[in-house]
Length: 230
Image (cartoon, rainbow, N blue to C red; front, side):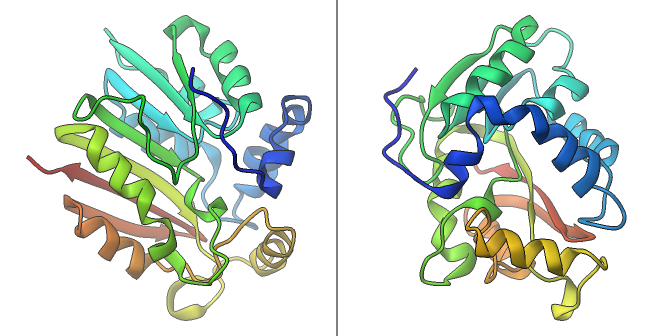
């Protein structure tokens, strides 16, 4: 395990392990519903399962619910968990103990110096990008260090996939009735920093680093997958 990150963000406080008991109920039980962000948890799990490999790095692990439900492919070789916060790492490692995960505590926007380049067959990044800081309102451009790190650790032909919540839907229109209220509140609390994020900017940033880029939206959620270059 790496040394603790120096980041001290509002999101770090809500991810203390003693507060994670309500995470799955609020995020996956309430927020991922048709009246809020849009797709249900089962839909996101299906997407997750489609792109998982036997040698996988998960960035921003939450409580491990998605990996728990999706399951590692048969004959899995390695599961590595990376997060800036100790609570989620401990919670997820315990939940997924059957896969013998390795954990690294590191900031998503800092260099992942402990991870060897070109070694993972897949990297998942679910519900992370909208939480990354963007104090100057630059949008996705402020968060591309994450994409650079993923491109570095994926092996040629490896799969990068993930999802992030957008502040507004297509053409600036809200996709679900309660979404604008939740999004505004989360941005005020600095749990989210996604006011300037767009699906178009995400696609451009991915295309600059990966091949076979696919980005689309379901409700307020942008999903993507892409392939590491040779």
